[in-house]
Image 1 (cartoon, rainbow, N blue to C red):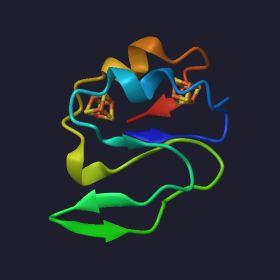
Image 2 (tube, rainbow, N blue to C red; image 1 turned 30 degrees about the vertical axis):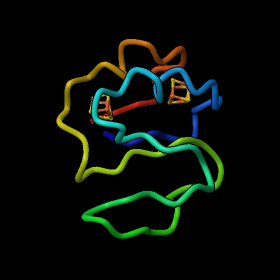
Image 3 (tube, helix red, strand yellow; image 1 turned 135 degrees about the vertical axis):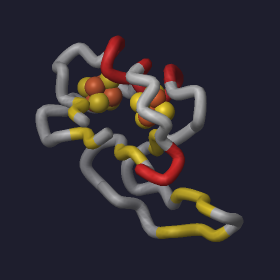
Image 4 (cartoon, rainbow, N blue to C red; image 1 turned 120 degrees about the horizontal axis):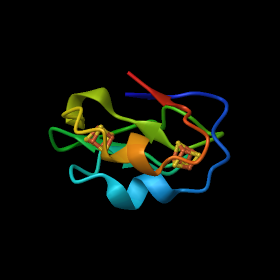
Length: 68
Ligand code: SF4
Ligand code: SF4
């Protein structure tokens, strides 16, 4: 899943992700025990390696800005 620039940073998707694959903008993400730089400073972002395409996030997004 990818979050586009149409995101309004409501953060609704973050709570819906069962895999904690969506991170707040500007925050580091953890993968295999290592910290990595934020993939976006502007809006929440998805770590692809943690996403299982359950689509929960797409269901709650008010702007339909999460795409496959
Ligand atoms: S599709 Fe599911 S696992 Fe992937 S980011 Fe969205 S809620 Fe999380
Ligand atoms: S639910 Fe949609 S608009 Fe809200 S933060 Fe997530 S991607 Fe952005």
